[in-house]
Structures are given as C-alpha cells and as structure tokens.
Image (cartoon, rainbow, N blue to C red; front, side, top):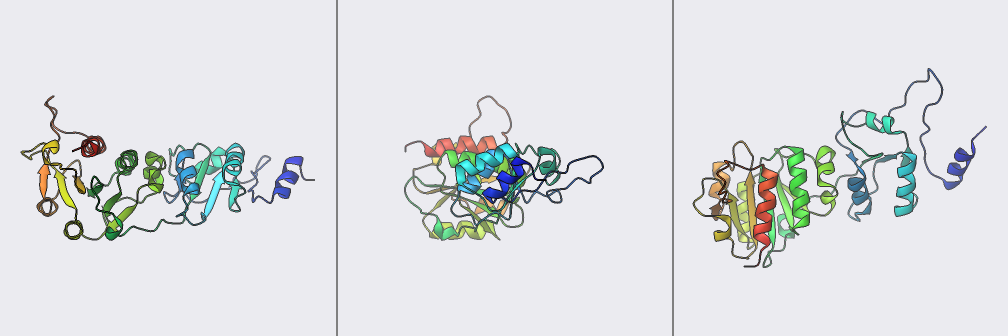
Amino acid sequence: MASPTERNDARKGRKFRPKPQGQGRPERRAGPPSDDWIWGWHAVEAALANPARKAPLRLVATSDKAKQIEARFGRQKVLEVADAHQIGLALPQGAVHQGVAMRPAPLEDADLADFDARHGAVLLVLDQVTDPQNVGAILRSAAAFGVVGMILQDRNAPKLTGALAKAAAGAVERVPVARVVNLSRALEELGRLGWRAVGLAGEADKGLGEVLDGGPTVLVLGSEGEGLRRLVAEHCDELAKIPMPGGFESLNVSAAAAIALYEAGRPR
C-alpha cells in the first residue's frame, strides 16, 4: 500500500526515483561516476535559471532540495529524488553536491564575432590553463568584473561541468565562452574586430597599469608552469606584468586573473 508521501508525489506528477528500502536490496545508483554533471546548489540553480540551457538530461535531488527546486522553478518533469549517498555515487569521489546534481544539455559555444568591442570591454583568453578549479575560479571573477567573454583552446581546456562548474558557482551560465582550435589565429581575428591583446608575463618590462588604455582589451593568461607560449605571446600587442613589490616570484593564475580584471576595470 502506498504511503501518504508517495500518493502526494504521484498526484503532483513528479518523477521520483524511490530510495531502496529494507535489508539486502541492491543499492540503486543515479548513474556511473562522471564529471559530465553539474553539482552544488548555486551551480545547479544558475543552470536551471539560464534561458540558454535546454532541459537537463537528468536532475537528481534530495527531498528537501527537490522542494526548493519546485518552489523556485515550478514542477520539473525530469526531477528524480534520491538520498545524498545515491547522488554521490553518480559523481566523482569527493564531490560536494549539497543534495543536488544535474546532467545538463551542453551550452552553445560563442563566436568571436559575438563579443562587442566597445570602450571598456574586457575579454579573457586562457592559454593552456587546464586545472578545472582554476578555470572555474577565473570564470567567477570574470562574472564579478563584468567580462564580456572567455576564450579557451579546444584541445587543452576542461569541460564546463564538474569541479569547474562547482568552483564557478554559477558563473558558467553568465560568461559566454568561445572555444577555438588555434589561439594565435583567434588573437589575429580579434585584432581585426577591434580588440587589443595584452599578455600577462612576469618578465615584461611594463606594469599592467601602464599599458591599459580603457579600450576593448583582451587579457591573455598562460598556465602557471609555462606561462604564455611563445607564439601566443608574439600575437599580443603588449606584454605586461603585475608588479609585486613583496618580491614573491608568482601568483596562482586565478589570483592573477582577479587582480588583472580589477586593474582593467579601473577608469582610464
């Protein structure tokens, strides 16, 4: 006989996955462990609120989070209910999912021509920055400072899901991302579209504040280990450094991005 909760859920028409009950019954997984999911409340909430997203392929939540989703977004046909442990089984080990995970339909990539080269606009280019946590943190700073977009190399950049989306805390949905095959050619095209490229390099002679002019600017950041690759650096209009009077050799790339974005956003 169905419980009152089950009858109420059935009347609401919500697709629930029942939790296994009783001893000896096999545990039901939400899917094989994968980083194709987005997890964490802020990341999932932002994805559900993004009109550019198609309906998710899957949406799994604890009963409490399912109620929050329904209150915020209305009835979700793909919503499944599972306990926190079951949700964790679908995700990479150690994923802090906060009771909700979504397997999203992919976002459409932006084109370089989509980015408006207006006065004060800033674009970010990441040259082989591959750590998902760093890229996610950079996206979060990009959203905070009103960056118009980010450009990643197709082969050497993480997916906009998983740990990256969790670190970005919803910024994946707010910052358009273009993926290109060749960053040097992309910088050439951006130059034709009215952008001026400034590469961050510790060995540069000028400080970042000296080379920024308030025009449409592409900030180009390299990986922590290698920095900008030679050909990418050669396609920048200027190279500049973040002055560090304390004498410390380098910054984490996500910290450098936040400082550079703050400097680029100052009135010129």
